[in-house]
Image (cartoon, rainbow, N blue to C red; front, side, top):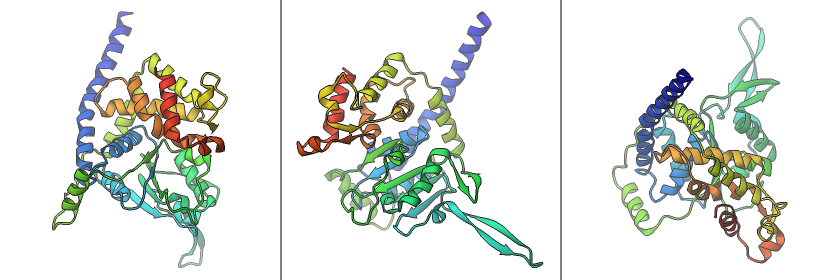
Amino acid sequence: MADAENKKTQEASKLIERFNSLAPKIKAVQAETTKAVFGQEQVIDNLLVTLLAGGHALLVGVPGLAKTKLVTTLSKVLDLDSKRVQCTPDLMPGDIIGTELLEENEKGKRSFRFIEGPVFCQLLMADEINRASPRTQSALLQAMQERQVTVAGKERNLPKPFHVLATQNPIEQEGTYPLPEAQLDRFLMQISIDYPDWKAEKAMVLGTTGAHEAKITKKLSQKELQEAQELVRLMPIGDKTVDSILKLVRSARPSYVGGAKVASHLAWGPGPRASQALMLAVRAKSFMEGRFAPSRDDVAALAKPILQHRMSLTFAALAEGVTMDQVIDKLCEQALD
């Protein structure tokens, strides 16, 4: 019995040691990213939470808010191999996942050679993802969910780690294909990017229009990122926090009886994948902030980016002027009181 207790104590001490060695580096990643992206601290934090949780993110914002800059900066700071795909209606699945070419050697023997597409990277930016056709979106769906793609009946594993950071323009919808609910559910977070405030925009104008721009350096290696992702899953979480997550997610479903007034505004709500996403995200947020266990405050802070793309309002609610933010705020009040 004593040996078992000693073993648990030693394992806990090793975890704490690993945690303490990586936590300062996560802070350094945050600080380094803000050198290139001004006034979007909350967006940066949510993106880092997504990556630490091992997930994908959908960035929603009007053009010119540094979405592409943010992704390229993170790839440098985290030392990740990154690729960018500009999604258009004529983009084919093979343009993303790759294709096989028939080649003939000097002796006349023919064979197929696989040419990898841009999805074979560690950080894929899918710019304006809703402009890609449903067929192309479905090809990306397999990569996001299974971390592998199938070409000519053969499964090919993607590099580790693998993350998709997709962007979407909320104001120009001509020629777009709305993402299906199944694909939206694969994004751990939907992160809304708003205009920077006066102070941040002034710093951005001064910092990006001169002769020199800030140089971005690596602050975390690929191996360290994967270790951090492992530690996030090993982080303990209290029963009260787990119950809060379940109560919040379950109350966002139209069939929920405990909050009929709010539930009546919802056409459909989040499934169990939302509970899993919130569990990982609150752990990642706690890790990023140097805390050993998540709290109910973390649940409230991450409720909107985790839930908003997994829910839909009824036509009646939209006619009444009800917004998704209002609904989630009310759900948090009920579930986290």
